Length: 332
Length: 85
Image (cartoon, rainbow over all chains, first blue to last red; front, side, top):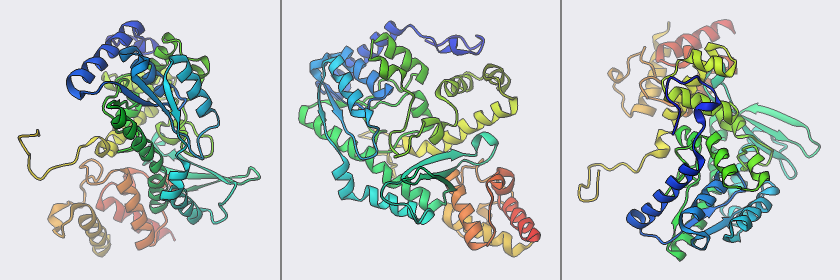
């Protein structure tokens, strides 16, 4: 699928035969449903973003729209466009779908309260009408990754502070309720329909651990986890998905202030991050990446180190529960 | 360098990350990140320990492995900061 390891490093290394790849994924989805999962359809949560849109379209290609159930699961901090784009996609694909607002569940379980309490430890004035986001910092400057909290007052004034450990962990734990509640709803419908749940991470997210354990990281099948984000966009266009979805920039859609994924986690825009990850995976020296991105070799080396650091830090997210000793009748 | 400071840092890491009080389990110059003893979240915990228990503020620019990636380095960093204040 990928260009050879000695090709000149540039966007061309990520080009793929879209139709062939779509057919390959669809065939594998059918095979997995039939042989390993023993389920008769697929549930996909649709966020309005590119990854879930492509995953839904691939699911339809694999088993037909009548065997795919789409879920739109907004909450207080979802972008206003999420449900509109989700509906647009569901209509385009001919999917049965349902909108279920998870905000009351999140209220009841304390998601917003726990988050706001941690934010107020840093910014005591934070309250109704304020917005927030978390921004990553450090890795590309050769420092250890850490997070900063950005808040915006109702009058539009922004403030930024480095997050202490306790506040950082509490904010992330609270907001992770969003992905975990969504997954609970997805599995309810999957169980009800005897379907399997589709996970929608792309390769950057899967490799770098940009998902919530037992939240969006949980699924029965992940059809695009091997594809770089650039390739996901290419499939979206080939599949004829709505232009507004194909043009949208990736966001976390988790925090109330607008927040790009590169701000929160990846530290580089996705197209550059794709190239960096591809180059690192193919053993390309930092000098090649530096030339391709027009950056210094030192910065390219830091990007490679950052990729490794994130893999190390998030290894736990991929791990199954460890046993004290193997139960060999079940597996290792 | 103060042995007392070094032992305090070593004890914190031994007790919190290796679940032992045996000083032989962690060489003072062992890389905490390289040996997988802590990850970046663990580093934030160490920074919290330095700030709250050792009374030294860690600036953003000082959050580098050269200052924080072993017991020796943390102790040297803390002593240098104390010397400057």
